[in-house]
Length: 205
Image (tube, helix red, strand yellow):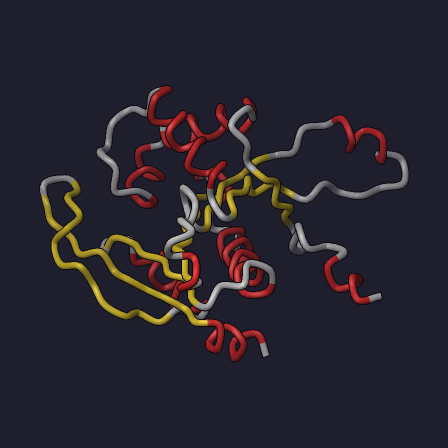
């Protein structure tokens, strides 16, 4: 069947992706904990570095829920013959979040078929390849199902690990905004990356 290729469309080898909604209390708790980690906060956001409160989390929940794609990144449950019923009732283990077209894409610009993507992984799950796996899945979704023509991503120039990952995945560095990120008494550039659908096709060939 033509739909056989999308049987596992909401998962990758080790992860599954669950849509974020405003009433998801488990994700709200996770998001609060995620951004209470100063290092995660600094590496994934240019927002003012301060403890995260309900107002900030509620704002982010709305932005993610309205996005073209806003998902909780979760570990894929192990499958054994005896735990099928348990899996249905056990809450997924959330390890991160990913958002494409945060806040939604207005109809007035939707014809341009581009959006930015962002990702954050909880500190205890970093360094295991989950970020690369999730971002690869997000790009596949954007070009296969979201019908986008280009996807952009950015990071502060001090986040060299993220910049290397983006280049390795196939993003092209297209420029930088100079000295627009203020962090710990110093100014840093914002690095701008993008990938077109033709570039994605070459990477995935």
